[in-house]
Length: 234
Image (tube, rainbow, N blue to C red; front, side, top):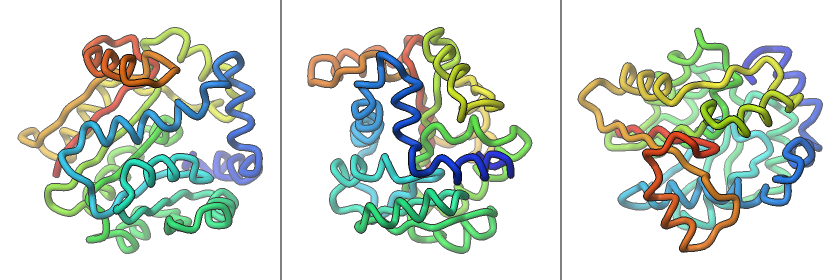
């Protein structure tokens, strides 16, 4: 997403972004809303209290924002992306979140420092070239208040179905799926070895209810979930 060609691509597909994902998911497209909602629900489960401010980093057209608002109704919400068209659409559709186009780490730090105590990065890093990962994660660390949390959700490359879906998705062409261990090490390098770092595998079931959600929470150790998370505290 942070390569110039990717920037143009996401501008071009902003108005049909979600529809393209649903189409590429095939049979699983009917579970698209549960794919969006579960991450906000899981974040609620993991955090000890409601944050004062959450930044949805790489928010695209803001599809995660309504669910973050649902589970964190008293939290100030921010969203940023490098795609101008995506941010324009997000602003026009969602009024209770502040959206910004951010193209550099310096812009991001200046805009959000001292405003957020939770960073939410969902399926963003695999679009960013590896040499730039630490730079952006370091910037996100800088904007976090002391005691704040960063959570990364990424597609699990150990799940064969997830890997196949990503490989056939045009907007993921050229993206490199990231191993959970890689993301965990990256957060350790930035946050420090003594920091609180937790990880787990998620989204074992596309349908959501208390029973399946409870089972999913117990399966965090099993590397077969469609996605995984890594959570760190500053």
